[in-house]
Structure formats: C-alpha cells, structure tokens
Length: 260
Image 1 (cartoon, rainbow, N blue to C red):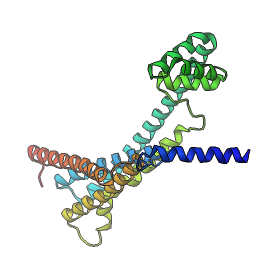
Image 2 (image 1 turned 180 degrees about the horizontal axis):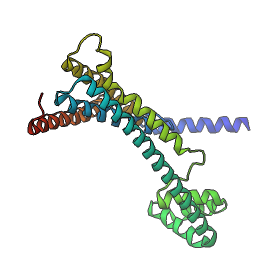
Image 3 (image 1 turned 180 degrees about the vertical axis):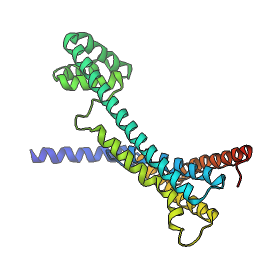
Image 4 (image 1 turned 135 degrees about the vertical axis):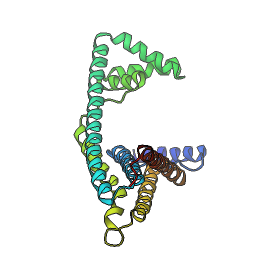
C-alpha cells in the first residue's frame, strides 16, 4: 500500500512538472466577514468625508461638523447594519426555499431531473458517456445531487446552516462606525493645537486618504488584485465624492445666501 501511494505520488509530481504553467495566481484572502468589513468601511469613509466636505464648504464651525458628522455616522451605521442583516437573512431564506423545491423535484421527478442535469453537463462540453456516469453516481447520493443541481442549473450555493445573518449586520455596523470615524478624528485631535477649520479639514483629507488607501490594499488582497491600482481606484472614488459634495455645498450656500 505504501509503495502504491509513493508510486502514485511520484506520478502526480511528474504530471505537475510536465504541465508547467508558470507562476501560480495570487490566492485571494478569505474570511467570513471580509465582504461586510470592506463594503461598510469604504462606504463609511466616503460618506462621512463627503458630509464633512459639504459642511466645511458652508463655513460652519467645528462643533457643527462633529455633531452632524457623528449623528450621521451612527444613523448610517444602524441603517447599513440592519440592511446587511435583512439582505443576508433574505438570501439565506431564498436558498433554503430553493433547496426544498429542488429536493422535491428530485424526489418526485427523478428521471426528468437527471435528464436535465445530463443535458447541462453536455452543454458544458462533457462527453455523453462521462456525463451519464457522473449523473448516475450523483443520483446515488440525494443530498449531493440536490446541491449539485442548485449550483449547476440554478447558479445558487446551498445554504450554510452555520451562517448567522445577525453577525453580518453587527460586523457591518461596527466596521461602519470604526472606519467612518477616521475623517472626524482631525476635528478632535487638532482641538488643542488650532481652531482653524481649514487646517482641520486638511487633516481630515489626509486621514481619509490614509484610511481609503488601507482599505484599497485590503480589497486588493481579498480579490488578488494589483495593490497600486486598487489603492488608486479607492482614492479616486473618495476624491470624486468629496469634491462633488464640497462643490455642491459651496454653490448651494452661495445661491441661498447663507454665507456668514
């Protein structure tokens, strides 16, 4: 047995060497809550930074910026967290319902379902004999067959029973508060040193850029993308949103005659 395993291992190694293929693609960063953290973080920084930019354009005080900024941050955080919870719950409920329907169809229309899966495999380029063999093997194991039909024909992953939608909502809420606080830190940290709102706004721009750059790096690591390109795109997104908010705030202030 040991000799057979060693022999098979040597054959596998030889096969891999023969295949070549160059450098292995970068493997993406995995994690249960990675999507929630990055999505909430990006949205929080851009939203809060844009709000500060629009408020600063109206010439309001630092106190106004902090009060409106934190109030908006908490309100948006609650909305984002609850939205993620509802979205995750709905997605899971749909998956459970769809799997129940697929299981019923397999139980009561076995031959028809097997024929559909056979046709699906053939459309993907599988030889009819190989496709028939695969379907016949899957048909022996009901749960595997049902999950395979969900993926192959409906494009849906089987629902994960261990998945807790409330955890996604909580992570999104916390991530939103943490990253969204970055643009506001300048107006707090610089209080002992200056009362100049323009200086504080510049500090906000710097902190927001750093936070966006870090999230750009995280996004690149998750998706296996180029770090520099991901950072540039993330910073560009924040810059465009903030510039639009600042310009609109300044224009509307002038039109409404609200200048101090």
